[in-house]
Length: 304
Ligand SMILES: Cc1ncc(COP(=O)(O)O)c(C=O)c1O
Image (cartoon, rainbow, N blue to C red):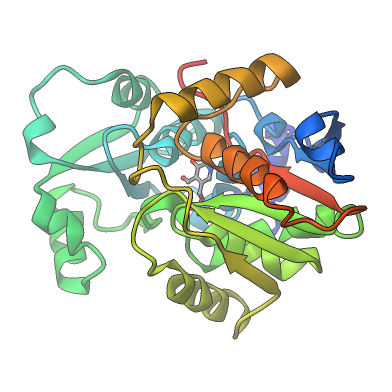
């Protein structure tokens, strides 16, 4: 690990993250009656503003930015943009958020973008087609010029670059020896890519987007971060509920019931789908009797 990959290094240590994050068993008869233990890895408690996988991914990037402006990308409700903006305020770093959707410019900001702006993030709205091709070097260079941030340290959408994936390996290392299966919700797959490299156990990913393209992207992320595929992981594509940020009355009722049973706030875009999937898999007897399953609680509801 280089010093810039060290999640506790430099100024970030002053933010006093709660690491390792708490690991708690919860009594849930949907697992108990099948002889399965359920643990919750409370990454949502790492830091009040750099929550969950945001800490794990952003910390090494903020250290690598070394005081430069940090520029990143997201949609109008991006957890990642909010976390980057909060980090900027906490560390005194300038931040720029490139937001998908030029039509949003000039309109009142939604609560998520308003929080980013209040934290000092400069918002730069771009047309959807330019946003889609932002990983093309020429488009990116034009975006940086237009955002008046040519010297910025660029963090990709969702925060999943090699430094972030290596940051998430620490999550796996904290879990090693405590469970048989670790399960995590996936967007870009960066969290799973790192978790699987560190955990030394079976890792199950629940994609919240439709598509079926994620396994290749995770292999590419692991190759970038570690030089090749790592760990024993698989994806179960049945629990996206129609796609990103889509929900159903059944999923909402499930999340409310889980909060009520266990007193844990359930983030709806990712964590609700993960927990729903684990209950469904327990009902299918997917976990052997006597096994311990850990759900990684990667975020917290907003606002909340
Ligand atoms: C709460 C939460 N959980 C899980 C994820 C998925 O992380 P990844 O993009 O690394 O798969 C995200 C991504 O933004 C998130 O906000």
